[in-house]
Length: 180
Image (cartoon, rainbow, N blue to C red):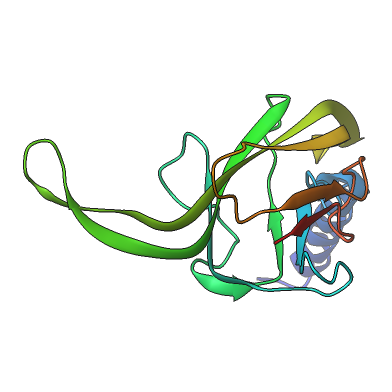
């Protein structure tokens, strides 16, 4: 390449780079655009200020066949962060205390594993509020007027559900206390 073309090539590269960076906006990267998770903490029913782990805890969404992503399966937990459905006004979960696999047979005589442990059904009701975050993030859902409804059975391991914060608009504070 001769010396007269070198400055033209460098100027062309510089102009292209400047124009490329000018085309980018702050909005092109989504940083704050996630729908918040519901934060649940577990407490001792006899000492309502003391956290109490749930042994071999498992969470499965009602109507789902797998555990909730992001919640460690069959571990001893005193807190969880779970997603609420953004397209519905209710989300149901099976909260399973002392979860184990139990050997069983299906109607055709085939060996299968079924859920063992103490299973309670818990439903969270709410109003969805869509919030525009930015062009890059789009919309997120916040959840207002949160309430919890436990399906009563003969032996519930969950004794009480208390809503601390009825507006779920962040994942940094506890929204629900569950006593067991």
